[in-house]
Image (cartoon, rainbow, N blue to C red):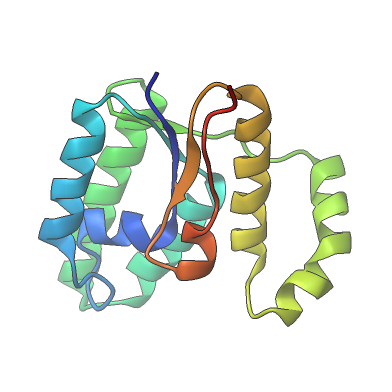
Length: 153
């Protein structure tokens, strides 16, 4: 059974070739192709979408930002319409956000933000829902890449 993969912002900016953020675009595209071939379930957490959108809006000249924003809109729209290897994850509810806010001061003290905390919670939820499958965060950030749980037998 194929793995469940959460796409982190560090990877999504590479896939979209975000100006002043992407440095490994070709290698990341090749890695994505491999994941598609083996039919991994590829999820786009809401934090990844929001953070990537911020990076696009803050980098490059106006023309480069617009072109990248259009690639972003095409990819996310295709995911929302089921025409992409990516599946968007649902935005959290108010109760979940309140619980996460209680955790955030300790999480922030480690140097990690609320977006990363939300991706970790998405990872925990997908682990519970997919016990027989590997569940991992595809990230270029070491602390998030450490979230990799093998299938339970």
